[in-house]
Length: 106
Image (cartoon, rainbow, N blue to C red):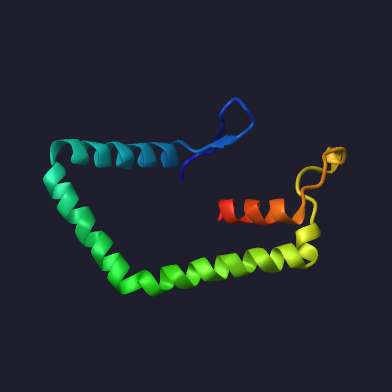
């Protein structure tokens, strides 16, 4: 297992996750630079397979997330205080602001 360390700002830092993610990102970028035609063909075929086979799931998920935003806004969960208990001096956002924030965070 990898060991989690502190990054100096109080946040946990896992070197294994960082280096694996960084390596995959660099490989993807190198692939797009060195073999752009091959990359375009592979990405297009994956995109076509995804949209043709799983487009219904994407639409269903989008509708479910919008419905969840409305449920959150219109029920007791919409009145839930966000932030630390010491942040009581902060103004409470309106229901419209909470709805918009919910849409942007999913």
